[in-house]
Image (tube, rainbow, N blue to C red; front, top):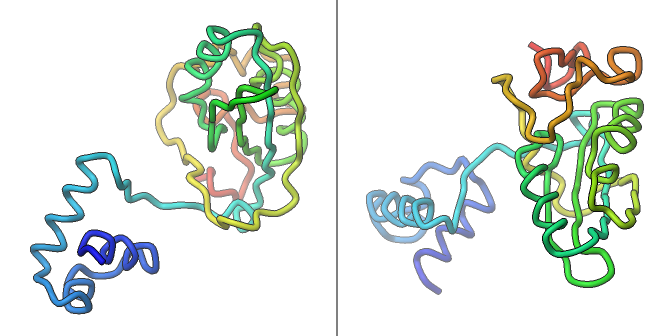
Amino acid sequence: MSTRRKILEALQRDGRAPLSKIASDLGVSHTAVRKHIDKMISSGLVKIEALINPKKADLKLVLLLIEAENYESAKKLIRRFRSCPRVVMLMSLLGGYNIAALVFAEDMSVLNSITSVCALRTSEGIRRSEIFLVSDLAKPKHLPVRIVGTKGELSCGFDCCKCPKYPDECIGCPLSKCYRPPRGSIFSD
């Protein structure tokens, strides 16, 4: 088994394992381990980041299956929502549906808003969509949920502050200047 693969296995067991421990277990220097990790990161093979357990963070997850009208519509939708902080995963598919998205919300009213007003499934170029509320994550238990700190322009083109559901039914997008995170959530200060 290659050193690189052994390093990956060690990091998958414990992403915070000290380089000296990994090096000792593999019988190589910590400098060699660092070089392998740096090379894997710079090549794009590996990204080291904090993953969040949506259940522990009390987040609701939805799987959206979307059939865009054509290839160009699908690419346009993917570009538009690629930067959305609520989209955990966005995938091109082969088959009847050509886009899948895993999306989170802080509560059911926000989930209702983002799936009916400002989300992928209501955008131009969509032929049909299906929405599935995720009851439990079997694997993996942790996901790359983005915790957004800097407010910016929303790539989706919506203005949460002018939305008819804001603020009574929806707390807004984490990128919006009018976002109101639930008290005690991982998004609040």
